[in-house]
Length: 286
Ligand SMILES: [Zn+2]
Image 1: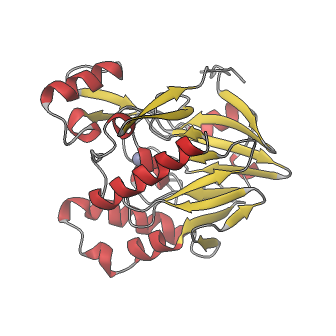
Image 2 (image 1 turned 90 degrees about the horizontal axis):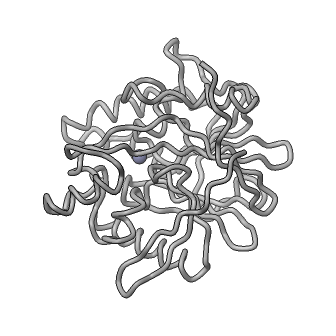
């Protein structure tokens, strides 16, 4: 099946960015808005064009080209989390980029929908020639004893994170807040969704902040910034991080890119009193 070449592309500073996808996942209203009441959840599901208390969450993965670098932020889930995922490699292929062309892979955090696609089913690396970057705190959490203490229901996440992270152990560089990965692209520590979750800031006329799951929903994270998202591991810390991030985005008039937001997940934030509003960019085809 041929893929339509309608991915959203834009130039930002010295970066050429194409928003790809690993395919949508389906989530329940209680994941989008654990603290919403049934009416509020139903309204959110309708706005996401879902029904029956479920809606699609996207997996927006930017391919960032600068100089000789081909960078992707997160790799999706392979086909191991939900069957609608695992499309990243085919989508790269559709724009003429082979997996072995990717020079740099940045992993925002170790949840399945962001990194279970590091390896193929035979255990080899999908992006075999890439350098990998993971937050030091994130790596130490999932690989250390603290992850053993997570509830039984999360142990499959622990096993999956360890399987994928172990596969890159000999080539990963562990990064911290403000580290520069390539010129003009820096790490922004955004803990809470996971202990070592990172976002990225790219220099341009205004900053571009790739927020990933620090602001997981383009509806709830903005309009109800104090509500957690279903997979926030430390809701209190996630809430603080979210408000700091959104206040900065408003102050800097930053461009934002969110992983699970309605495709292409690019836009800006404004503030209305104590809450925020997301303004999606007009979509352009590449
Ligand atoms: Zn996620």
